[in-house]
Image (tube, rainbow, N blue to C red):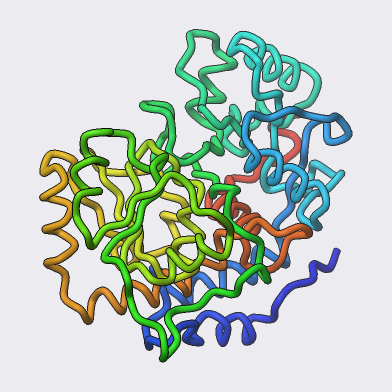
Length: 351
């Protein structure tokens, strides 16, 4: 089967081309490796979906978008013998006991689970599932890749195995192209925040008292919202608050500032992007003064470089219908490709 997609050379040019008015290096951990792997994924990756003709109800829009995009993509195969990974979909409101029954039925009806005890399987669960005592649930949690919403529920995301779904709130490509400031525009605010993005009312009050910071409940319209983002150096997010607009912030060059009291291990595209060059992470212990001190202490050259990196990476945060190369759907699939199970068993070993 031939999978349509950008050629390797075109992809390299796409990744290395500057996307903002500021000349910045590509925002990837390794641009060349990413380009080669992505091209290989488009040509080779195959996924078998259990119960593909069923309708599933998920808790988040990102989960629904992922499954709809997957089922319409060339990655899906009806021949499980050629699949690299197997997708186990189940309704988002199922109890863990019911999820265990789903796995039990799969292992009883078909041989693929038992080859690796689920290590070449993945599933979507916005809140994540816990470590239960049932063998089927334990193997699913321990061995299979979990697609979780960002930010993940405490203790239910396994770093280096699980994948954080990109938020579904980002405007699709074409609804305001990625851009930095034009030559006749100037920064109006040091930082911008929407109320739902910061959970601590006291912190909101203290930050809101600074004339350089703009915090509001909701912009009056989309155009006003985009202007807020483009005219602000930083956008404030509380880890655990509303992060649905983080991709929009990056698209307009507003550097995400994530307020957190612990290391974050479930960042979207953590295997691909150099987040330290695109976001600022500030401890919550310093309060409002700590946040403002961290932002005002950054060198102008670094801020401009980060803004450019944000704009360059923002294309990967858009859920397009239908999917487009390098968008959120393809980047989630790419992370699954990186986690594909590499051990292939001869038929005689499991038949």
